[in-house]
Structure formats: structure tokens, C-alpha cells
Image (cartoon, rainbow, N blue to C red; front, side, top):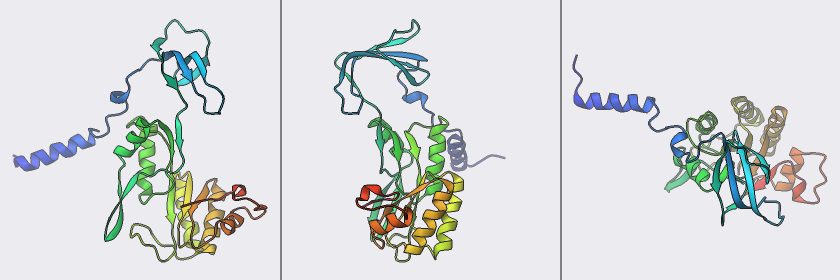
Amino acid sequence: MKLHPALLAAFAATHAFGQGVFTPGIKPFVTVDSPVIALEHGRIIDGTGAAPLEDRTIVIADGRIRSIGGEIPANAKRIDLTSHSVIPGLVGMHEHLFYPSFNRVPLYNGQGFSFPRLYLASGVTTARTAGTVEPQTDLNLKRMIDSGLMPGPKMLITVGSLEGKGSFAPQMPELHGPEDARRFVEFWAAQGAHSFKAYMHITRAELGAAIEAAHAHGPKLTGHLCSVGFREAARIGWPSAQLASPRSSNLNAHS
């Protein structure tokens, strides 16, 4: 049987995609691949506010910093960082893997291929997603990064939004009561969610059920709060808290 050229091309493209053409692993993006690396004569800024350390050498072995200023192993690949600075990797606390594409209907388009690469290229080595409209996609991308199938930062996946009735975005499911919120949290906690996000129209009862279910499994909640005030939300999440300051919350609010 002979295939039509168009069908043959389609088959080849599908087969190539299955072989990982679009996820070539991390090797093509790694310029230095040595088990032991010595970064010599660099300025070290440790991120604590302390004064920079000048003309220091960092020894990295098997992907971890082993010493600063110690002896350089004989098998180390030596890189001269004179006139360069070394800083810790940045931790992004409110990131997304989508971008809004509003044209009458508010939709959010996933950017799972480019965004992890762009975060990493910008120095973000850990990223907390703070909400998603495609939780399974984000969780799978995290697993691909963790297993070395594609480059990206360490991902902490926030699942949600936990939204009540009145959502403006058709990609967000609306909750139908506290038990619905509980089921949502329990399902995604079992899939590996790091945290959850409450959204604008969630009710107090739904928020309470979501927090209770999340804390039972370990994750916490963040919230784009409107229908529930941040002090009230904090009390729901941490009933014994003395809320003299929003810093004492176990549920953090953001816009």
C-alpha cells in the first residue's frame, strides 16, 4: 500500500513529535558539562544583604556547591570569572505558564514550551506558578523538567483557580458548594499540586472547605481575593491567629 504524500508527511511529523523533536532534553542548552567545576576569581553576592565577597572561587561538584574559597580539585573544569558576579538563582513567587489573549472572550493561552526556558534564561531557577487554567499541563511540564526531558526551573505548581459562581473566564470551572471545593482540592493534591489558588467569587464556605482539605494533605492556599476579605480569609485558614498584621496569615492574598 502506498501512502499519499500528504499523509506520509503527516505521519512523519507525528512520528517525529513522538520522538521528542520539540523536547530535545537539556543537553543542547548546557554550555559546561563537567562533574566538577571551579568558578574562579568571581564576586559573590549571597542575597542576604551582606557585603559581596571579592575574588573568590566556587567549587561545584555533581550539581551542588561544595566549597567557597577552598582547594580546587585536580579534575575540575576551571572558568575564570574575573570582573563577573555570581548570585543565587532567583525564586519567582508569582509566575504563570500562560498569557492572556482577550478578544471579547477572555482566554488564557498556554506557553508551556517557551515560558520555562525564558524563566531559566532570566535567572529564575525556582518558579511558583500561582495559578493555572491547565493544571495537568503544568504538572506534566514539571515532570518533564524534573526528568531532564526539557529545560526549565524547578516548578512549584499552584492549581486553581478555585472560583465560585460569576467567573469572567470560561476556562475556570465554577464551584457548586463546599463539597465541590473539597473534591477539587483532594483530586489535584493527589496529582502532585504544591498549592492551590482561590479566586474572586469563591464563597466563605467553599474557601473554608478548600483550606481544610488542602491542609490535610500538606499544601497551602493563595488567593486573588474579592468576595472574601484577606483578614477573614486568614482567620479561616488559621483560626487561632492574632491578626494584628497581614504577615501573620497562613493564607496569602495577592492581586
